[in-house]
Length: 73
Image (cartoon, rainbow, N blue to C red; front, top):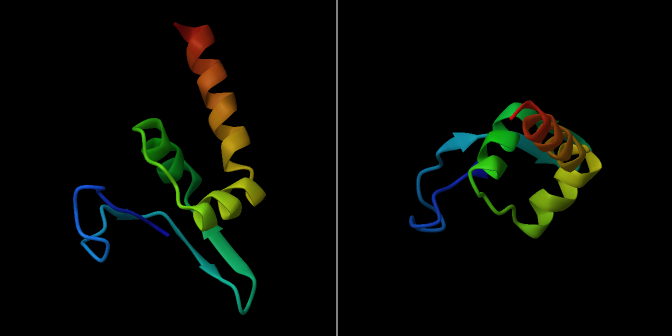
């Protein structure tokens, strides 16, 4: 899984690798802080990345961080 600038080509240079998914071995690694950073900057995950992130509860983590941020203002 990589973060790519939407203005670049589909196979363009990635901004940062944020994880990987191996469907054969059913292994997933997600760099949650990096994913949260890019989602916070407006990144839109593909359907597959969304499903993987949902299973890893990344969106729960994002909601928790947003709630903390709102209370700390």
